[in-house]
Image (cartoon, rainbow, N blue to C red):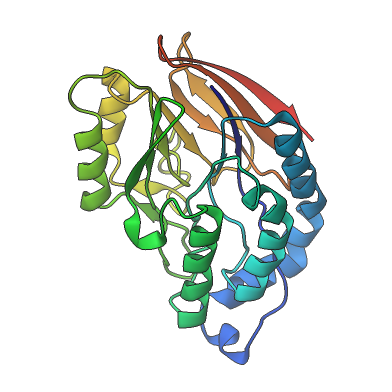
Length: 267
């Protein structure tokens, strides 16, 4: 089967209401205004959508951070670009990033939930996560590792519910390839240097990866793409930022041998 994986478009814009200046959204708006809008080009996301529609993979995966501050207008901007893909018959898997789950304001939470429902094309809604989808003989384990955090940090958390779900689905007879979909990487080479941006609670999942019970992790969050894989392609794949680095990854999966080959695409 063929998978196309992209992440982190970070659509942004101005503050959408005065309350944005009294919660974390002002950080995202400030960051977008003076930094992200000069680095992130949403036309590259449109090019990615065209590529996916032309090549017609078995599934497309987006690992979050559609927005910069989780505002409804930001979601609307990116969802409009993704609409041709959303309306196609190509299955799409999406899990929100920390910038999509930026604050607890009801209208922002509702916009994020709506984005999950739209992009999942009826396969699941936000409240269904964690969930398992079997597509073309591959088990996709979809988890949400994102939640609002304080002003200074972009922490992610693999909660006990998600940990239990992953470990239960990585036990027993291993026939279908198992791919975990998470915004945050499971591996972290510099946990102290990246303490403000890291995931917590993934220790047992890392052991499942080491034991070969979990074949592959597809993630985003880190904007520069990377592969941390074995000779047969098992491990972790970060797509990078589609709008900043203009990168996404095309993955060929041999479902019988549970092996993977990767091709990083530069848009």
